[in-house]
Each structure stands twice: as structure tokens, then as C-alpha cells.
Image (cartoon, rainbow, N blue to C red; front, side):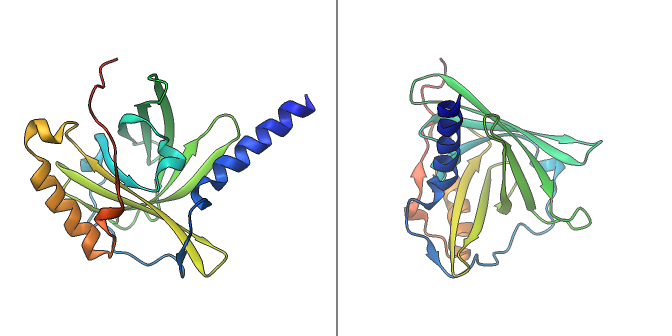
Length: 200
């Protein structure tokens, strides 16, 4: 039993530390501009992950990542149900809830809490830096570390799964790159997420 508990604690610590395996960025998290006049209900529905920066700690090495966002009118939160195909070629799921930082403002600032089952919940910022609700969304998360450093992650989401098949990639990339560049985030640092061969 003691061995099992030690193993569980070590797994939890490794998962928590994954974001810190690479060098942090200097200074504290920048105050970036989130989507102005954010329309939460228009944001609901399916989003596909097309690319990301340092998202492996939550995304893993999978493909075909997608998430469904549903608004809970009673609790005024957003339920997110995500799934992807793992490296072992099986569907895996990860659920989360999003809560607006301030419901009196129309801003794309949330706290997202991932339900990790085996060792508890993890809460991080979820800022929508830009979206047109129908084509793209740029999501940013940042945490300060030892006061003078920060780590951040960024997700590039789309409404269409196969951007090449629909011919939307040039327009999509122009939209997301404009948001990234206006926030001094380098598009060249992003890792592409495969959205092909998803019917298993």
C-alpha cells in the first residue's frame, strides 16, 4: 500500500512539473489583451486543436484533439468535454469547467479547472486572446514562477477539423497569426496537432 501511495505521489509531481521541464520566460506574466466584448454563448460548441505551444503537459502526444463547450445556465459555468487519440491509438477523455473571472464584464478571461481524477483538480488561467467564433480561437494561459519568471501555454483552435480539406487554412493562419503577433507571441514556436485519420 505504501508503495502504491508513493507511486501515485510521484506521478502527480511529475505531471505538475512537466510545464517546468523547459526554461521559463523572464519576468512575470505579461498583461495581454483578451477578446473585447466577448460573447460567451457564441463561443459554445466544438473546437478542434490545430497547434499549440507547450501544451503537452495537458494535451499529451495525441492527435485529433477536440473539445465541446456547453454553457450551464444554472451554475453560470462552462463545461468542457475533450477527447483525443493517444499514442496507443485509443480515444482518451479529459473534462474541465471554465468560470468567468468577472461575470459583469464581457471579457474572455476564465479560470479552467481540469478534472484529473487520480490526484485531483488543476486550475489555470484560460484567456481568449482573439476569436471570430466561427473560424478560429487563440487561447493563452500563463503562470508566474519564483516571482521573476513565468511559463505560458497557447492553443490555436478551429471550428473546422480539416482546414486543408475545406480550403480554410490560409484564412485561418492569417487570423491567428495576426493575434499572435499583436501579442508578441512567435507563431514559429508552435507544434502542429494532427487532425487526420481520426475515424477509429
